[in-house]
Image (cartoon, rainbow, N blue to C red; front, side, top):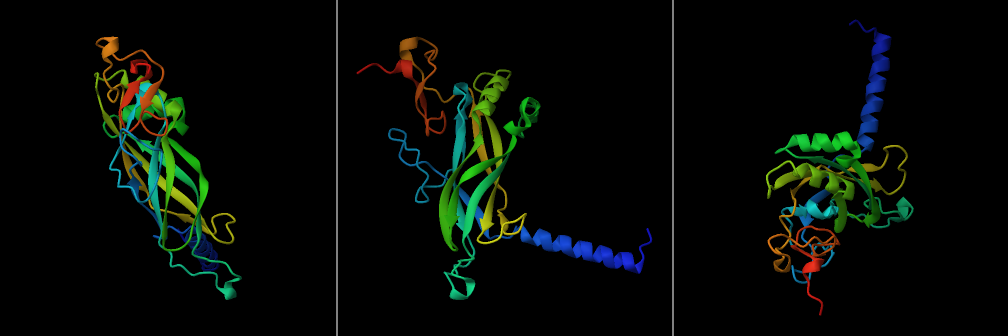
Length: 249
C-alpha cells in the first residue's frame, strides 16, 4: 500500500504517541510477585495469617466438596530504588506504589472442558479482576497480600464438574495472577499504572479427598454442612473434619 510523505508523518506521530502511552503502563520489573506464602501456624493451630516471614507455599489444595472459596497469600516486592521525600519533588517519594487490584485467569490443562463449562455458566468464574485492599509499598520493600483465585460460586461449579470424574480424582488448576499498582502522582488513564509480570500458582482441586474419615458415621463422612479445619474459614490446605464428627466436650 502506498503511503504519502505527509501521511507517513501522521502515522509516525500516531505510532510515537502510542509507544509513549504504552510506556506509561510500566511493565518493567518495578514490582513483582516473588512467591506464594505458606499460612501461619500448623495443622493443629492454623492461622489465617499472611506474613513474609513464613515459608514458601508450592501449591494450594482446595476440597470443593464444601464449596468454599480459596485464598492465596503472595509476597510483593517493589524493586524501585527508594528515593525518600526529596524537597525538590514537593516532598513526594516517587518510588512508592499502591497495590490496587489483581487480574486473575484460571486454566486446567488436564481437563480444559471443565474451564469451558465454568465459562459457559459465567465468564467471571474463570477470568476476573479482584479489587484489593490498598497496600502502600515504598521502594526496596516487600509486603504480603492475599487474593481469591477461586470464588465460592466457582468452587460449587467445580464440585459439580468433578462429579463426572472417578472418585478421588485430583486435578491441578493454574491461577495466573497479574497485580496492578499505581505510582505516586498522576494516574489518569494508564499514566502511572504499573503491571507486574504474571505469576502462576497451582491449586489442586478435589471433592471429598481432603476430608478426614469419620468413624462415628460408618463407612462415609458425616453428612454435615459444617467443618472444622482448613484455613481462613475455607476447606483448603489443611485437613477438614465434619463438625458432626467432633464429640461434645
